[in-house]
Image 1 (cartoon, rainbow, N blue to C red):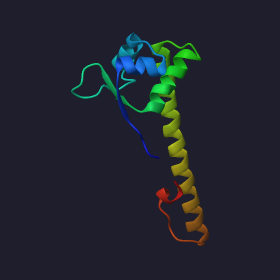
Image 2 (image 1 turned 90 degrees about the horizontal axis):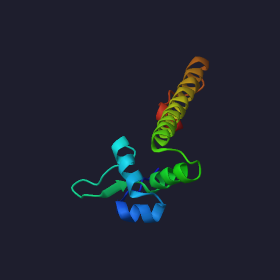
Image 3 (image 1 turned 180 degrees about the vertical axis):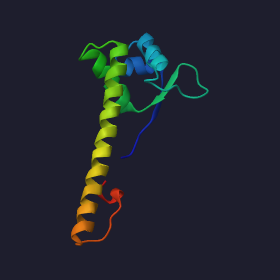
Image 4 (image 1 turned 90 degrees about the vertical axis):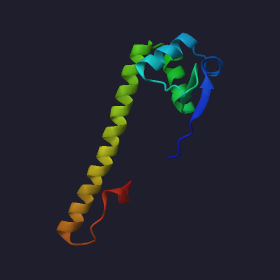
Length: 111
């Protein structure tokens, strides 16, 4: 999956995504948004991530700390999904090895 990253000022980000600049500063403090290196008041992050933050705040009315918890759970869920894919691949590989009906495959072959 290709990742797109943009560099945008606090003001432009607030205008584009409907977030307050103070909220953006809190997101930076919590580590939810990355600052652009060497440029003051500028964010460097994925547009989808910024849009997700805005949706969590506007549509669900979550506070910045609640958004932090939701995003941590989302990251953990993605990690668990990747682990599940890896374990399924290992199970298929083991079945093929036991029943002798195929070559040994790498788990990445199923991703």
